[in-house]
Length: 113
Image (cartoon, rainbow, N blue to C red; front, side, top):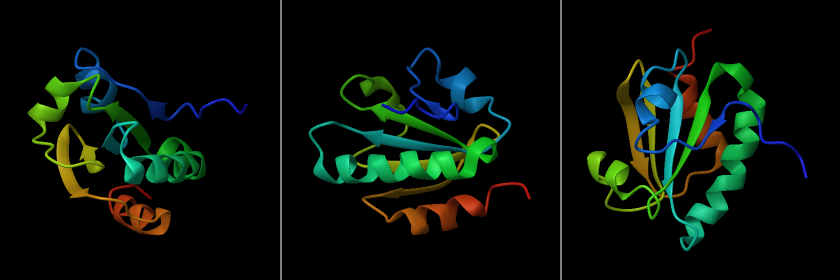
């Protein structure tokens, strides 16, 4: 099994601010659950994308069943819920499966070149 890229995070309520809020690069936050079919379809696409963008962005996977407080704080009402956080602020968000190319297009707007 291949090691997970260093830019993939699994923040908790306690570590969210240090993992995501203080990141120097944009963070794509994926609120998901293992029982959600679109979430299961999206996760491998995001993992591939994380490997492709390398140090230019981070990817945070948050299981809503394990971190309900974070899901509530961000107003998550449907999953997968995706948000791009830059400089501690949500700069883009959407709900539902999106193909890897569409996610990359949204993320690219916030990656410094």
